[in-house]
Image (cartoon, rainbow, N blue to C red; front, side, top):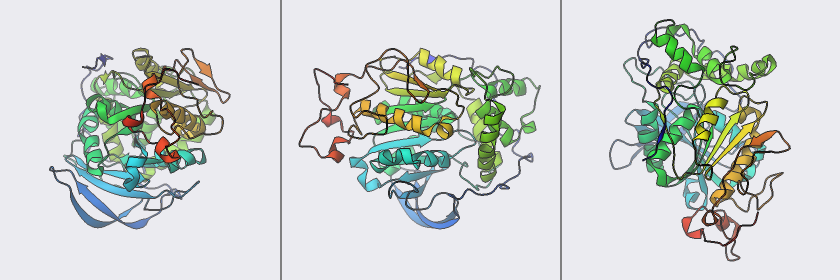
Length: 435
């Protein structure tokens, strides 16, 4: 059984219903809708996960989520939105790529943070630097319950699922209904926390994890807010969804948020319009439900025998929390990437993140024939135990020595597509590894 990081997680829980009937002071839907989020009539298959059989019905819904449409940059990759009914409500999976080709592609599952949704990861995967990876992979971007754009309030008596439940019970329902057996997980913030819990329970279904701003229980500005609320010093209703997202993403000015250097005012001014726009497009009350679930999270499992890439911006309030988790990880299996002068890695440093992800999955044995600018074809996250800096300012902490059986041996009989497939039978024992 995996051991656990035991940060302070014994403070009283915040009741999700406490403010459900109180008026939220964030303007709902007042901001302009982003150009990429078009209002469209789309036909989707609703997949119900209420029993052991899959029941599909066709329904027409109006949504601001991406319809089935070509990707915006560097190639035609369809995006299909599939609502999947779980016992806690609907989780929408935005499938970027062809599900019919999943056996020939590496599959990435992305899980979003508080005050965000699938659009953050869609913006990342549609960045030109991700074009080659996108064309040879299948991405499943999930919107958790009530977190899509323009959603109605969840019922007053609805109890948002705990972070542990989402990771251990709900994500597997999504993958099962899509018939996906093996994934590489990419999660940010609360989404990273969820993926750790999924991997802890379904270890054999996870090839590796990319975890951005992962923090154990008891770490972060929201933890101090939780303590103040629990002791009666503050009321949760005092904080709008926008306030909560700002604290969660940017920390505070007290210097106690965990940043090595708090973001300058100019950087905050650049990021806040993005966060405000996301909040305005989403349901503010539902965002607060997700935030409460995250604030009530329990200790984080310490994964064993799992390839992990931890990522944090040097100005993120979760840098110290990520470093604490890394300190307890198996250094043979875990890499740590610190991106200097950055708060939001997905938004501010997509090129650095894309290159690191490619190096990481090359070490897992797929996309090995793929190259990006600045990456040697044979290079992986291996062979070094010392920190290093690339020319772009990203600092890679101690990285794992990838074992020989994790490296794919090239065979002339394989096509390029076959060479990129993450199939266990294609992994071979080799006596030497060439960097």
